[in-house]
Image (cartoon, rainbow, N blue to C red; front, side):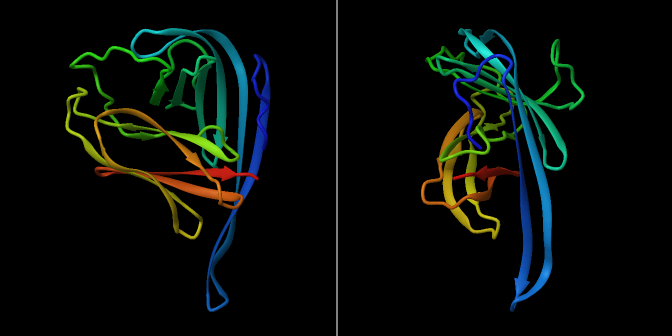
Length: 217
């Protein structure tokens, strides 16, 4: 799918795709094939000031997205033309689109340096966000959160973020190092890979989470 950029207030786009999974041995099927359908919808539903951690404020568009894979997940992406981005995953799929919304994870990118207090509050939970854009060609951003014990000065965690094909083969390693508590973003360039569904897995301490993404040439 091609994204129409720049996005404008009120614009909407949707995408659907299917994943086929099966295991064979000696030419005979053991599992499957199993076909799972996925659908994603995006709607630019608001515009206004956005404040990122550190206090900087930007005028931003808000994109509400819904992903069924097959469970429903709902989230919001706030994008400013200066490059600031905040991604929010709602913990309740029935949440209203305004007011106070309970969230399961938040990550952000600030285009400018911001002051950090010595004892700034650290994320309480690990999280792996859905990549954006998705589907993508040829690159996409993956955001993740490393939890701490309450402050940014908490000990670092060994973090590994890998990309896998549907046969379980690791095709790329994006992160393989110790990370202090905080929110991070990494770019994945799929140059040289064929179209299809890929998995990306975050391992940090005892936390393991895997998500799907779709490369469309």
